[in-house]
Amino acid sequence: PTPTDHQAENATISQGVVESNHAGFTGTGFVNYDNLAGSSVEFAVMAASAGNATLTFRYANGTTANRPMDITVNGALVSDELAFDSTGAWTNWTTRSITVPVNAGANTIRATATTANGGPNLDRISIG
Ligand code: GCU
Picture 1 (cartoon, rainbow, N blue to C red):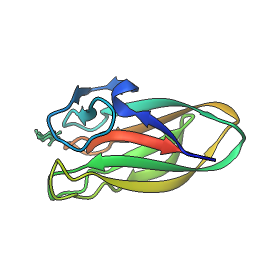
Picture 2: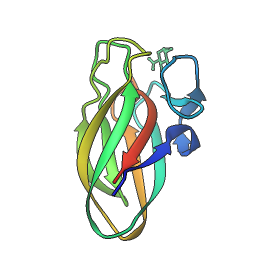
Picture 3: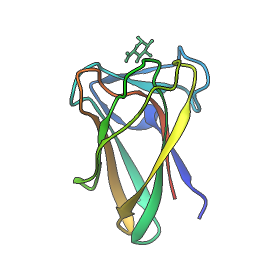
Picture 4: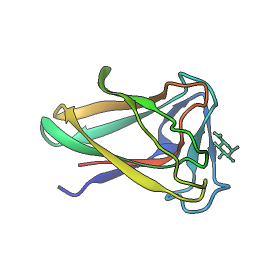
């Protein structure tokens, strides 16, 4: 199926702010995670059927250091400290995909920063 986009600025943000000062984002902005471990963005996504889905994050990381995040689906850890490596500039956006298990119907996907640097700037996820 065609992947469905979910903008980070419309998701549930804990310890982060919506900003639009670095060009190249989609939608109306992106989430700038607060610079601390535990800051998170949570998405409510629907899946037509149970099974594996491709989850794609679109992000920017203008620092030189990885900004890892724990990825959970319906509360279960599916990717431990997933790397969000440098993209060279805050205006350089890239994607990173993983395969995740989803339930038929409603699912909750959360990306939580695991270091004191917080997460990358997160533009959106796509799932499909
Ligand atoms: C800069 C940048 C932000 C980014 C922040 C960070 O302030 O402008 O967009 O989120 O660095 O290091 O997290």
